[in-house]
Length: 235
Image 1: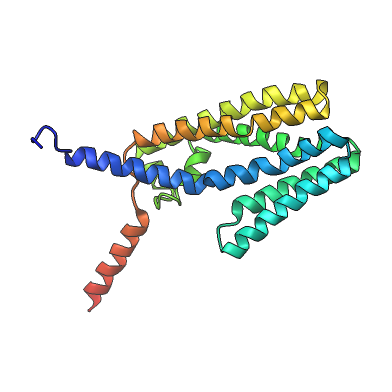
Image 2: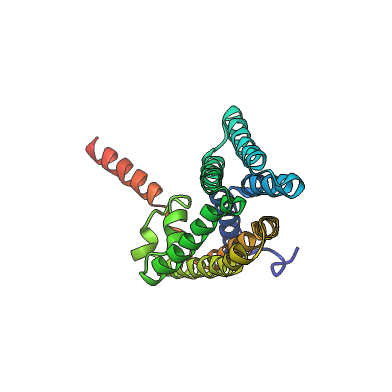
């Protein structure tokens, strides 16, 4: 291998940064299992309702599969935050639909949450405290250091928050008219179809922005080094 063929330190560092970014995003957003846990309850609900138009059976089945996924995670001692959020989302939908007697209302809490999240991404990006940075800062061990010490990452987080906000707004712009004009099965199948693609697009754009940004400042490592320095000085 010639010197031209050998990867430079800069290339290696860039590859390492991309790998760290991929791993952090995978952890933060739940990976493949997280996507399955997000889609499966709604898919089960609309599948059963399409066949027999039974709101109670569809709702109970969706809630039951959400609980099973939590139990499986607990048994495997895995992170349960994604499964628990799915259970709460399904439970709200079940309660709401049972109260109104309208099967479409099973989807309404999740739709309102999506719209609220879209606005939160956009408002925080405009305010200079992008939500995606608040979410991913602890994952990258940088906490809020990107706000004052790493302007390149703050810019990347702002772009990512705008991407998430606009994508989720677009999703809401499709779903809310369907809530009023379509029947339950039409709304349900469209909603299931829109679960993964917008999410993957937002995650991909986040990865693109962060992969090009400066590396995070590991504030935990800094604190540990400072503690070690103080301990050495006191000896």
